[in-house]
Image 1 (cartoon, rainbow, N blue to C red):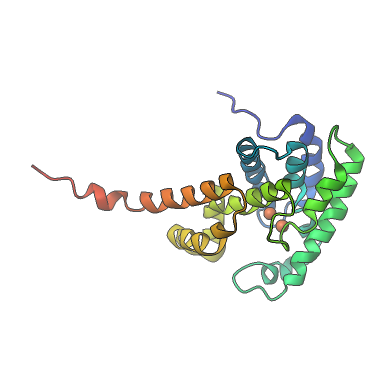
Image 2 (cartoon, rainbow, N blue to C red; image 1 turned 180 degrees about the horizontal axis):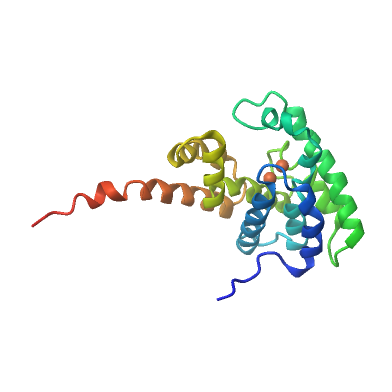
Length: 207
Ligand SMILES: [Fe+2]
Ligand SMILES: [Fe+2]
């Protein structure tokens, strides 16, 4: 069975041009999963515009490529000391994305609207528009996907339940759309329950 393609044909030329900028940490894989999540959120969020949301999520993190790799962990991670670099990746990202979008001028895509979302996607927390909310939820919601949980647990060398606990405390409360919030909380609840399967299975009576 061939799975349905995640990335729309319109966005494939953008993806090819973005790839050389996404080989920093797991940004390439993160972007594919976040794009898939964005497509689900779009279906669940009436009024959001896929022609803005999807190009924005595809290109949102290209700016990390211009940040000194040795400083990356100071920008993110548990106790970030270089939050200015988070802002820098948004500004660089908008520049790189502008070049890519102008090269292809994908039909029906409002380039300025896409760039406005990329510029500020991490440093603003509130929803600046419904499209912005969906992009932010796809980006942050990635953490609650199987890929995100696995990746984050690897970064910090923690087990999956610790990651779930951190997400429930610091990430899920900031989800902006009902669908995004339900997704993130549902994934965490399911992983917590899965960790207790053996405990409950052992209660089977021998009688
Ligand atoms: Fe980002
Ligand atoms: Fe991201």
